[in-house]
Image (cartoon, rainbow, N blue to C red; front, side, top):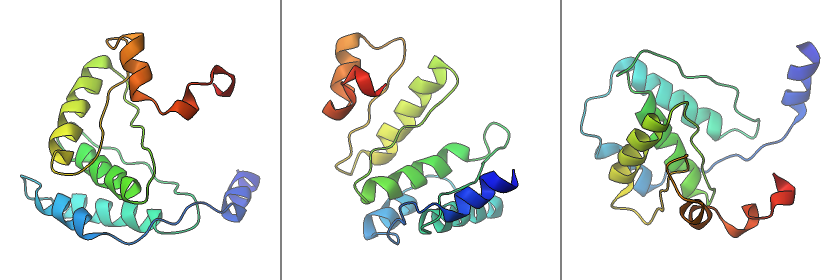
Length: 139
């Protein structure tokens, strides 16, 4: 573990830019009042993202405690820096729920949101992926 964390500390990652006006617009459009814990987690995640050291954070909590909104905001921050984002979820039902949430939250911004699960056809999946990931040799 010591060697692992030593290697992580020496690794340089991407330091994301500070929040943009669009980031604030997205956050202001949230339909609910954030809890103090949720606001703290959001600030910590975004703070981690703005550091050059790769993030080492896990967000966990019961259903309905705002984990998805934290992911929505973190993903949007990455998108604002021109990055592509993948959100991994454990069930196909959750894929559809997250697709609906992310699509709804990003609807006023020029962001493409797509799902990849066993319910998409190969043609739909290929349309969702950037050309660079189509080369099977990189899988």
